[in-house]
Image (cartoon, rainbow, N blue to C red):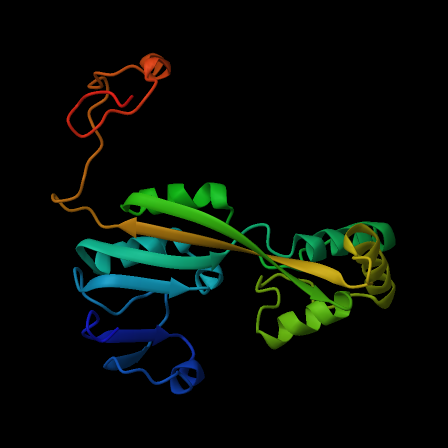
Length: 239
């Protein structure tokens, strides 16, 4: 890695996270900074990487624009973030339980970005040659309380400022029963789904490939069915 990376700037809003980072062979500079206010000049970096932190950003479009700004022309942004279908089992179970026991519900799971919006957000920030992929990871737990305890331990509890501060005991018991009935496995465990969105975007540069002008095609899709066999290197059809 040190053969291709000259210097690494590691930023985090948490001082403890920076202190407990793993040592690498690459010269690393740790900078305490808010991801929404990047303290770097325009056209500074060849590469920006973000791993599972963008779902905590209040102004995601603004953060993407800043990432685009600090990249050099032809620089690339590679990121992974938690997607909108994350913890849908927990979200649905809590909502149904609150509706039944309390006559209404409040959000108990953090809001996440939908994969259908991610490409638009990257494009609006100025990125080109976009790649967006998705992966679902299921983790199995003994029950709903274990799911919530694990989320709390990861620091991934509901981040909404207007969140409801407590759940009634009856509501929790109902949610546990609903979770088990709707999503439970045969062995009694329950799944928790984490949707991970992967993204790649490039800052424009004149050297990058560009799409052909609309209407410039000289081959029709209707002709594809007439192609029976590929041509050989000398231009003749293979027999």
